[in-house]
Length: 143
Image (cartoon, rainbow, N blue to C red; front, side, top):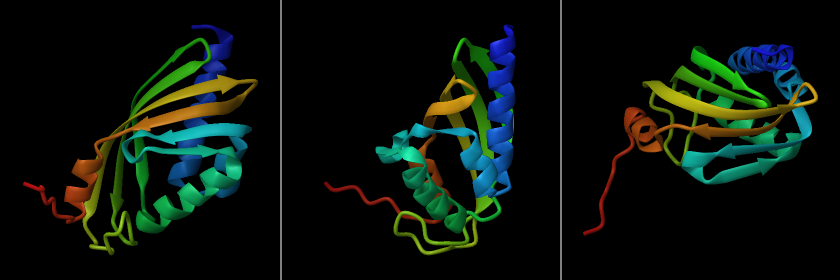
């Protein structure tokens, strides 16, 4: 593994630790000003730290005790791939569902691009239906 790849892995570890601690300053310090953050299951694309901060407000309000366990982490050039398990309690509104107090476990895959010591892109993949069902939302099919 190259020295640059090792630095990228350390940055991503720092990023996830800051997210798990709900530390805005430390989390945003890992991001480039022009960060493009994609929440794939929601179809959301956030550009810049201000938009990403609004996402953190939503996520950390809905799941204030979130903990992130890194299951696998790999680097290839400027790319880092992380498989994680996020565990949290649904304590605030999320996607129109009022707080239920239920525990949620999400298996998450993140594809992250690092340049000049900062994250410039992150695409987050997880099963949104699984999360909604875990918090107690109901699924209604039309037809």
